[in-house]
Length: 130
Image (cartoon, rainbow, N blue to C red; front, side, top):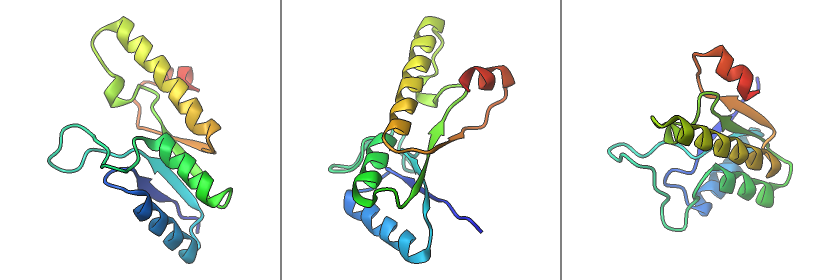
């Protein structure tokens, strides 16, 4: 049975990520879903801890730098836009959406090998996304 660890940047320093990845290796887990993560409980806005990772792209780069191609890395994609990109202004939303696609491409270029999408309700949005 294939297993994939969901690894977030939330409250994670590089030392904690290194420990988690080493434990994955010990357990034979070689697939990681690299995520920024949600804000911790009781916190409205996501913030990196001092010395921690700012975003999933940083996490993907770190995994590749420290572990080469050992891990298969998945990243998140948002067919209907990342929640932080959603706004009421159609022009701004279109700009935000385009920026999210550029960011997604950076995650793939840094070593992400597959995209796991957020739940979506509009198939047309998904088809545009792919």
